[in-house]
Structures are given as structure tokens and as C-alpha cells.
Length: 534
Image 1: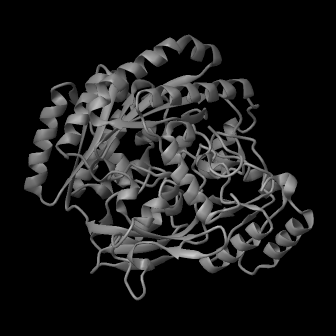
Image 2: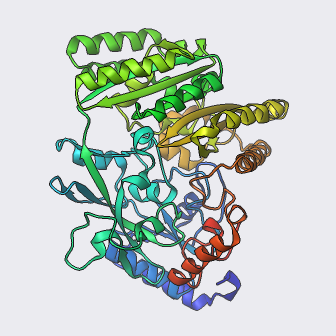
Image 3: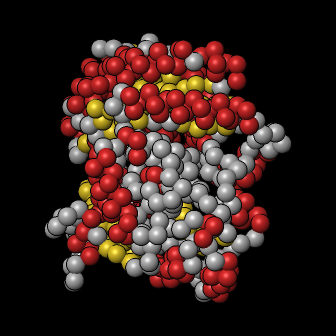
């Protein structure tokens, strides 16, 4: 339903009803509307009519129904860490649903090995709830897990902690509870059966998978059940330096083929210089204290801390590329065997270096999201794709050639390029990122802290360079698609309709029409509904 077809009286009545709905947390002041018109990269966007912050799923369902009956679009939002227009309104007649107040841990079932949480739970909260159980989800959160929510991760797909071994968050999900556009609440998996526990994803068509990676286009997530496994008893760390990305990627793929690594990431020298997240290994006494507490013994912890303090991040710059790995095992002997094999693979193409980066990352996995800005307050935005494991070499070669051709253009605009690579289950993941000088938005300030951004708060907007970054991201997307790559976090940013076969897209459109016939659930996301994208 296009904005021009709206009935102003119906919209006004719906907004009044939202304001009067107890527990809706509805706000429509100018400051709130302006704040929710931005994501990490895209701003300023379309301001929503208002924002609902529901206190429970029943209230959220009532609010969704109030909106859609009046022709108002519903735009789901989690922790706000996205940069692909996933939670930005595509039209003015829209209400954003900020789900962070739905943050209860509903059930931890250690006997049946599952945890059910509301969609607004952060990954830090999920892991805190499991801390004394000896259990963990396979994938257990992104680096932004202090802010990023379970619902957001499921909507956009997500990978990092545990992902080299256990793939993306989608592989850890048993079932979800979603609110459809008409306000109906639907449970998938065995949780949607009469009198059954939410212990199984099977038992008919995989309806759970339908709502994973949908970017909120098919429904508003309000809860999820995740599978649990015993947490590994032993953990150790390795880092290597390499002269080229090809050398590093060869090692990553070899390690992944033997399922040796729980998580790992490779970065170039530029990332080591510009990333605030990487450079936090030299954050002084706070990091020292964490490392001391995290050592297997007090003596080993002090030794680790001393090395981190002495080396900081400077040793990373001695190598064009560095790889940082976490290995886990059920016992010491198993870990010893895996470490020896990983060392042999790494040393075949590189040289072993200090392992303080993965060690510090693991000592406090869910730190403040300082990495959403560069070390000196530069703006940051990535782009990514995943590829079949066997295609890593041609992908790396094409990526290197692509950015070599655009170096002069990037230099002219003051755009700094860096790159990160990972393996995610059986896939090769590549993520270039761009840094440039630009204004600091309220979203950045609230996310990393006003005290952090104060030195750069008065920087003027740099729209010309931001447009150049947007063009560069689009060209990178097209490159990766031409190489057979697949994107997560599609939203209204990555190409989607154009990359699907017509019959496949027709099926998806039919599903969208069935659950959202008026196209009011996050319009334009995945190119579905009105306000379509490529």
C-alpha cells in the first residue's frame, strides 16, 4: 500500500492507539524519529512516524496489528549494529519496532539441551545465562554481542564466535516465534506442536529456516530456541604472519577442511593500524587484569599480560597479513594433537607470532563496540560475501586485482581499504572494510560512548566521500556476485532479486504474499513488497 493511498485519519487513529497501548513504549518525538532514521552507514534516511518499544510479545503483536490495519509499515529493529538498511524505513508511513525490551531468558533446559530467549536478548545475556551450566550454543555471538540481539542475528545471519567449526547462527536455531503482519503469533519447530517441548527443528517442512536471514521481511521475531552442547573443556590460541592474503587463505582453508579451529580471522596490516578492536589488546591495566584472571594459573596469566602490555599491537605491523585462531577440545590430549597439526599447517605458508590477539578477544568477547569507528574516529563500513571453499584462490586473486585498480580513486577520496577473511563452516568468507573521515552520528555516539567520540563530535559531514564509499561497496558487491558469491544481511543493500532464478524468486514472492499480503512487513527488504530494490 503506497503512501499516497493512506487515509490520514486511519493513520492518526492508529498512532493514538499505539500511544495509549500500555507497555508499547511508543515515542514519536522529533529526536527519537531522527535517531531511528540512521544505521551504521546510511544516513540520514526516512524518519519513521514513531517507534514502538514493546515490553512483551503480546503487546508487540497488538501493536503490529494496529499498524498494518491502518496501512502503516512495520520495521523490525534489534541492537542497531546493521549497515545494510535492514532496520531503516523505506517510506514515511512506517513505525520502527525496537525489540530490545523483550530480553527475558525464558528457559534453560540442560536435560534436553536447549535455551529459549526473547529476541531482544543480547548475546552477552545469552552467554551469561549459560555461564554455570557447562553448556554453550554452537555459534555463540558476534563481536558486537554486547549490543547485538538474537533476533537481529537471526534476521540478518551472523557469524563469529564458534563459526569456523559450527557455521552461522542459523545452524544453532531449533525454532522461532514470529509475529506475522496481521498480528498472529506463530511458533516453528516442535514448539509449534500441541503439548510438545521446543526441542526439535524437524517434523515436517523446515518453517524455522523460512524466517532466518529474512531481514524481517516475513515476520517480527519475538523469541528463539537455540540448541546447546557441552562447552569445550580446553582452549588454546595461535597466530601466524604471512606475506600475502593468498598464503593466509590457503592456511585458513586447510584448517577448516580438518575442522581444527573454533573461530579465527585473518587481517591485513591496514586493519592492524586502523581497527580500534584490534588495537584494544594494548588497552592498559584493564586488559592486563582480564588476562591475569583468564590465565590457567595466576603465574601464566601474569606472563600473558606482560607480553600483551609489552607488545601491544605493534608486532602485527611486521607482517602484511596475520591470522588469529582459537582451538578448543574436550581434553588436553585432544587439544595438544590439534595444536600440533594447526602449527604444521600454519608454518607451511607463514610464521608463528605472538597469540595475544585471539587471547585478548576471548578474555572479554563482548566488549564495547569500539570497532564501529576507526582508531582515530574514522567512519567504518564493511562489505562481504561467502564462497565455496575450493574457490578461495580465484576469489583472493580477483579481490586483490579489483582493489589495486581502484587504489588511485580511493587515495583521491581519502578512503582507506582493509580486508578480513574467515572460514565459516565449509565456506570462505571475505570482508573488505573502508575507513574515511566523516561526521559522527548519534548512533555512533550512543553505541561507543559520548566520551569516546568527543574529540571527533564536531567533524562536518563528508557526503562526497560517503557517496564514493557507497559506489565502491556496490562495485564490490557486483564483483563478488560475478564470482558466484553469496551475501548475508541482504536487507535493502545487497542485490537479491537480480541474483535469483525467476522461479525461485516467484516462490519467495508467493510466500511473502501469503504472510504479508499488503507488503507492510519491512517493505523493500529482500526486494519484496513495495519500495523494491535490485
